[in-house]
Length: 283
Image (tube, rainbow, N blue to C red; front, top):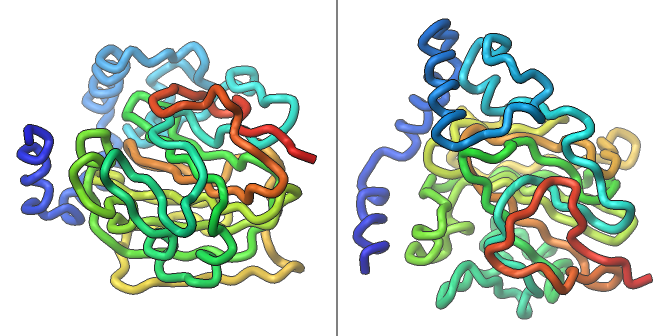
């Protein structure tokens, strides 16, 4: 009941307007004000700047430059084999899609087709596949990397709401991940089809990929699809950057279950770092 009361204001506030405002504020070159905000943020969230490519806050002209900071190459070593974790974050859910239904939180389910913006053909592809949901808090590293080497085949932008995606909200807002704005990236990989889904959230003012640049804002009102031929499709090498978030949000990963299986030690609530192993090879 407490969580339900906390979420009520999110239904009432202008989610997209506030997120557009956050987008502008985080890109404001505020000089001393920006540096003060960055310093307070680092202290509040106990962020380890020793692993950042630059630990000097004077190198970040805007808050967003700091928030999407790169890390030293040695900060996130890649596991020797198998799919790796694409982000730093908390594992909210992990398991196997039950037919075409996915678990959001205890007592809350949503369908694969809803998540994929009504793309029935892709819902059929991933029926019974592996899925995991990774939540990025404000303190986390906010660049997204590809779990296995893959060739991009299609990308879908799905407009939607911008509810928060923290644990309290996922427990009470029905179909949360199928309601929020999102960008779905489909890849053909050495372990079969894979989807990496970037889910927007309140104050997440920008969803971005390395091949298409900034996709939001502006916020669309219709589903958009991009198809990539084998001749022109981007190919990303395992561990290479795929995209990034502004502020905290969620990544949902879908993997075919024919060639890989989740590692048994993966459980909901576990904190993971980009590059750590997620799944083992079956072949």
